[in-house]
Amino acid sequence: MKKICFILGTRPEIIKLSPLIRLCRLKNIPYFIIHTNQHYSAILDKIFFKELNLPYAKYNLNVGSANHGLQTASMIIAIEKIIIKEKPGCIIVEGDTNSVLAGAMAAAKEFNITIAHVEAGLRSYDRKMPEEINRIVADHISDILFAPTIIQKEILIKEGIPKNKILVTGNTIVDAVKINIEISNKKMNVLKKYNVIEKKYSILTLHRPSNVDFKINLIKIFNGLKALEKIVFLNKIIFLVHPRTLKNLNKFNIKLPNNIKMVNPVGYLEMLQLISKARLIFTDSGGIQEEACILKVPCITLRNNTERPETVKIGGNIIAGQETKKIISSTIKILNRKIKWKNPFGDGHSSEKMIRRIQPLL
Image (cartoon, rainbow, N blue to C red; front, top):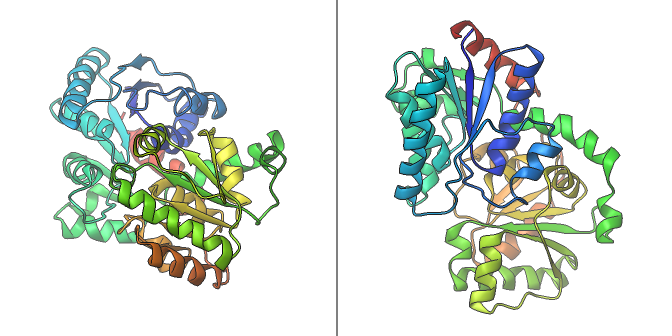
């Protein structure tokens, strides 16, 4: 049997590929992991392998931070050498990062390697986002496209991708959440750690360049969150600060409102529990939009678009952007809604459907 090669490089990829890696171990399917180290902070990386009980990568590329072209090119060169040496039968990439683009492009040049794209068909329709370009290219050179929902399948068909390449599977994030929320609740108590009461605090994450690289956008966001302290009593907001965000907060000399408490990034298990017990989530992360939806916690997305339209359609998410007034009105609106939506991302068996599709090809 030929090997499966998992290519990953960021926190979301580690999390979303973890159920597939676990299943390979369970079924004795040979595999190996290439880690591009696109996320190069131990806080954003090694802790997730440890918590998710995953073997460390066989290959670490250590590309680190760089301009998109240089970073992607470095990955392609290194990945190509590895796949020529290892001769895997299938390469699995997940999501929309430069690691995904590089992995798919390197594999596309080699014969007899099947490229499988997990979380295919997502579109924000914002070509200014590097992730959007990565998604589109990866989808159009992949051999198997695992679409989370029928919405993504229809998008892919409209773009001319043959139906026989597409399989609607749900999203592996559901598999990961179902397994790990129980482990988290047994291992730790975030309420005690952060001195908060369940459903009496909120979560904030910001990392996208369109937000954190612009002082005016950060100020507008923080002004909105400050105003909400009196309007809807959001007096405890836990702000998990990404390294890029922290750098820019210092650079711009921005002082946070009193109702926002800044803390370092945390591991996956702790983050899951923090989300599950929160009153509300503010984020520009696609993955956290999904996790909030699955855990039935209202979400305000601090972007002008989303590639997770299901979360908006079912009423669990509102797109607020960065404008102060829109953040305030969106928060009031979502807090007045009843939490009665059904998770749109599958039944927690997505990884099994994917492996069943791939295994005969090895």
